[in-house]
Length: 291
Image (cartoon, rainbow, N blue to C red; front, side):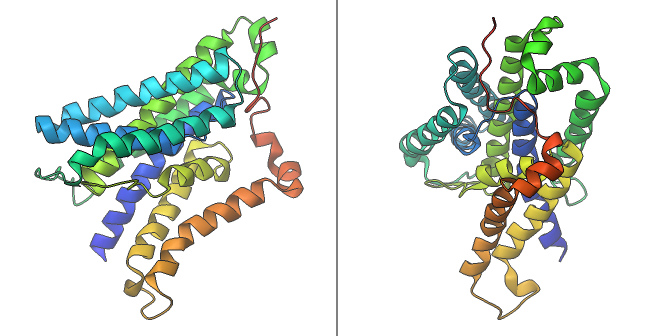
């Protein structure tokens, strides 16, 4: 049971990092559906660098750098060029899906290094995630910087008139969001499941995307959702621990994604928009052109 809980927390940690990055993006008004692609890049390059240099530090740094660059790329298309943000995000995902398969295939297999030590039996990244959740909540809702980010996501025209540099804020948020997604991918590849394989994230980025909507754009609620999905994911891998003989494990593997679909359908309903619409950044997904 202890091992099950520890692994669930490890999975929740990855969802938390990726989800927080996307939450910061969306609070500034930028939607990035390409989280999965950025995570794939972070996981693959982090794995390759770590395997070739035998340095976890360099691997995580590589993941942060590639995540930042992809965040900037999405920002360039979405902010500067005003491209449809869903199209740009899907482009990032497709790029990640294809290119990481090519560059990572020679490294297929286990990492082959000693595993990073846990702290009291729990992933050290879990403690980092808890601190980051609290820090993100504090910055967004208790500081002047957070007020600027939320203002840009709600009404960029008014924010610009008030002296806030909308473009600068949005670029900063997309860069930070990309870094966190890349880091989440690296945590998966270097700690949670240190074996590289083709498309090995299996949709975790899309679950993280759904978590942002599920959380009502609140970091504290997002962390709770991440814990729920971490437990569901681990249960889908080990259903015999609690529900032996009930359904095939392949059906259980489908459960987290089925719930993701339900969440996405729910948030698109008129009832949800009328009941909870105020929580959604008003300018989310809309390009801004300075007059």
